[in-house]
Amino acid sequence: MKTDFQELNSLINTAGTIVVVSHLRPDGDAVGSLLSLTLSLLAAGKKTFPVLVDGLPQRFSFLPGADLVQKQLPASWDLLICVDCSDFERTGLGNEVLQKNPIVNIDHHPTNTTFGNINYIVPAAAAAVEIVYDVIRTLHLPEDLGVRNNLMAGLLADTIGFRTSNVHAGSLRMAADLLDQGAELSKLYEQVLNQRTFAAAKYWGLGLENIQQRGNLVWTSLSLTDMQASGYREHDDADLINFLSTIEDTMVTLLFIEQPGGKVKISWRARDGIDIAVLAERFGGGGHKPAAGAMLEGSLPEVQEEVLSATIAYMNAGRN
Ligand code: 5GP
Ligand code: MN
Image 1: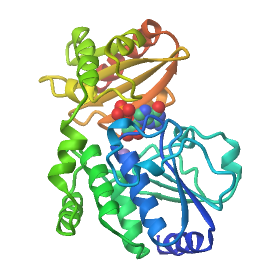
Image 2: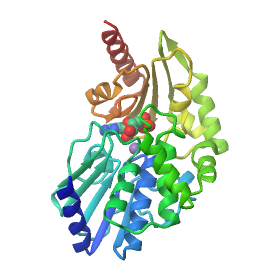
Image 3: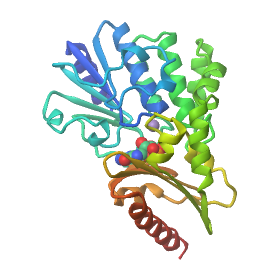
Image 4: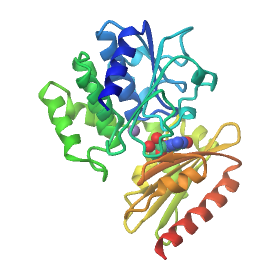
């Protein structure tokens, strides 16, 4: 691991231009990791570009450095750093990019495919920002309030306010350190986890209207028509899946979101030690034991039928 850091250090030192990239449909951890590392590298005097192929979700536009995010790669670069991406496809960048220049892969998904030249994967980390924080500290990269607020935002987002089962003492120590050094915990908590737009609340409502239950399984779907009707324009689920997973006596929660171009995005949440990432991988996706996702081709009813029956079979197999 020490050699990795030395190599990472020399890659950063010798690179003229650095690109930092995170995943499609970016969540708070993706954005927090991207912006904290970018701001730190910029403060270190490195020419750095943060890239999100889907663009920055409007609800994260308050984060320091948000205005720097671009949807496309610059004409050239010397080092590409991927954060919070379990496989290269998650970046949304073309495969030709894989052939170019060194790639550093910083992630916390157990399903990570180790696609980088340097892979710094810590599955025990509750959020990718924990690993970014470690990199910043170990390499003595600069930290300021912008860096710290982004780290805190990522930590709050991925742990839903320190509620997920992968939160460990180190997550809380990191939050305490950041708080000690000025990170605005309560303000970020409100902005990252509590605030939602009127359109997001309407989108939620349409999803809740169709909620269904079978034994310990709860699911619902959101169609493109629902998106139109609500006026919700973001790429995410407006946090609906996390709300569904609070329904009592539920072991697995499923959300189907129809996408443009004949695709359906699936989100799973699981309890009681069920490893739902294994099931997501069967559909070409990935994630963590209690939270995973995948993108499937097909119409909403087709995908729903296929994935529901596979999920029920998976739950039944676990019971035997
Ligand atoms: P969500 O359901 O909130 O989109 O994602 C839950 C978890 O699964 C996250 O850790 C996310 O990175 C991962 N995930 C979601 N969609 C995909 C996907 O299409 N492919 C992979 N590999 N992981 C995904
Ligand atoms: Mn994450």
